[in-house]
Image (cartoon, helix red, strand yellow):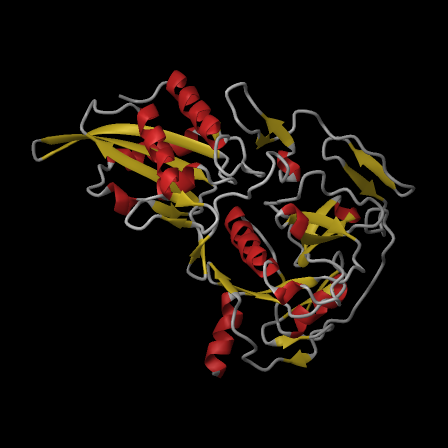
Length: 403
């Protein structure tokens, strides 16, 4: 039988209750909501009657799956979810490892902090005279990612709701919750704008007069692009393949370096030195790349985990660095009343830290902030940070050819 509205509520409530009870406690655990779209996908997966549920799990299209089967009537959905959560007894948060010969991936997906939507289903399967009941939950964004062969931790430990993102700046806590869960705030923001801006109440951003950029429209610029196209909003060039430099006039030679992290075919390199925002942008462009563009939760999770590992070494203690933060390729464009990637695109995904962005007048450039678990912060562009360059698959192909 299909799941009714009451069961939808019970499944979501149980997930949120268990997510509030992780140990050590989570600083960035998000509240989950029911998704009918995910429920349809879960029903399709359950109706396919997978022969080996364990092999059918994993993730695809930035989704995660938990699947289990039982003899019909042997377990309720609530008991199945509790079974998944009980795998946490075999999971060591400090090492990020599961006990040998044990399974923990159901637990880590259930408590993956940035998974905020779920849909579940069950189906009675009969084959060869044998019957079994298949239970499926689909999660989005998914979890259980790996970076350089190591599993990413499912959440950041710390006081509850202390590392919520700007978009999830509310804190949801019921009487039966141990900790709070990050949620979309229920109250709209309030702010005032400067001399050249007017407040857009619906977006909580200032609208700028033509010809101005930045929070208070203070920057004008122009540049000549030899082998590339000019981006007026970004005051820079986007170079053609094989060219770099401020005006895309330099022919690049390959290869450069090996990638620090590869995600879905894209190469990410962490700089050894520090620059202000525009210096960092130029350094990446000289190599034929761009400052990193984080366009989904998977990339955010993996980079945050990787940078967190760097933070525990001596690699980020050079006195030349003003902070332990890292520039990415996002700046505020007053003419567009929004943040834009350096390639001109409007971000469909953001991960601003709680209370961010907040630097009106000054903070037009975006960094990954170590103190906020590498969620985003708007910062003065003249600050010296390390930075992350990103190279598309076609750039990497040129490196391979040159070897």
